[in-house]
Image (tube, rainbow over all chains, first blue to last red; front, side):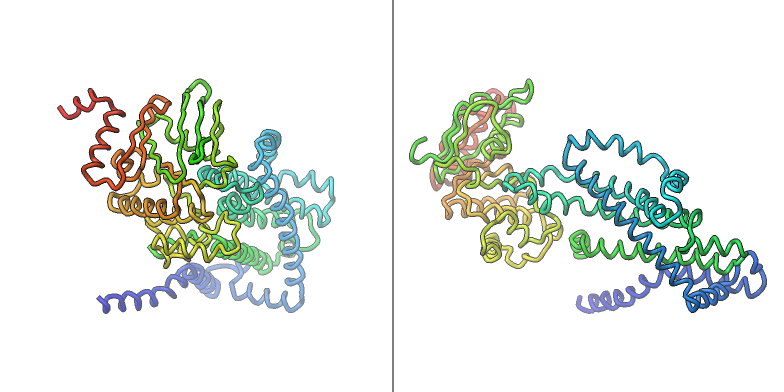
Length: 269
Length: 241
């Protein structure tokens, strides 16, 4: 019995690095295949430059300071836009989830506004705000507001009524009811909204920076396109992919930190 | 309200739109008494318990709890454990308590329900019976004078159910709690209660006093009498034929 347990434990120890490495396997194979294809001349550098060339371009642009400068501007726009949009979405979701009157008053109009593709607002926003920072931040804010709103609203309005009744039987005040029952119960759904909003954030920023910007990763890609600089175009796309992956990882680690109770039980079963 | 009375229910009616849930219910429950409300589904047992708990208001009539008529002396245990899944056992117990020595008291109660080693577990790591024991401990956290039990053992297996019955009886007797148990199980009512109240057609129409220190035979006799009242003797004869 003890032997089988020891074997199982050893197997688990061996399994762990494999599970962690497995997600990287496909990208590594693709990059290797891409590099080999470029080296053997199967892929023209004018169509798709080799990964090594893209990497060298990245190092060159980092050393010149161009990549860090544009990266920090893009990150600034994304973060501020998400904070504003996510904040407004959360507040609207909260008040509409908590109050029936507010729901009747606002929800229908918000749903109507939500159905307009936010990227279709670009011409209007450029006309109103020009091509400065506020235009791009506003666009990101509008794009990220709705996923956070929908999920906060849904999370709050679908809290188990049995738990609310239990809170009532303990004569909890309204603020205690919110912080001890409603918010923690709605949190998994709110985090789903934030994770979705992060995806929308990058998509919106790419489009906004490509159409109307004089800085940022999107601008860099657009500028490189004008000069037929394929390495930089690919580099910008890779940077976006890495940024997207990092934000997803950050969101996931928030989930595992705040929703520890969801996984703790399962791992023990 | 007389001197020994803990809960007094006078001419209580409850209507849901056109549906009568309770009609002219009158009941007096003494301090330290264990009452079981039994009857068919839809008889108004749970509604009456919710009215006593203050979760709903009667359409007419009056329910008085204690001399101060305060609901804070009562705690309710539901059919579902209603533990907060994001809190560990200790935090679930401390939830809603304003006492400074909350954690120490919670640990005492965990020992009482024989789950002292589970303080840091989350509810999804516990079995159904363990969850209900935690729910009982939580109900006892604020040292209530009245314990309201809304079919808390309905979802448990027979063995766990029997253990929980003993635990509840033991706690109620030691702490001299006034207890109202809503149950579908007539045997459970006959085993646990001092008095059984049969709810039928939206009112309390029959009461059965149970003998003290009853044996299995007496429990069976009481259960049969109550069952007769619920179903009617003709129905019983039809079923046994």
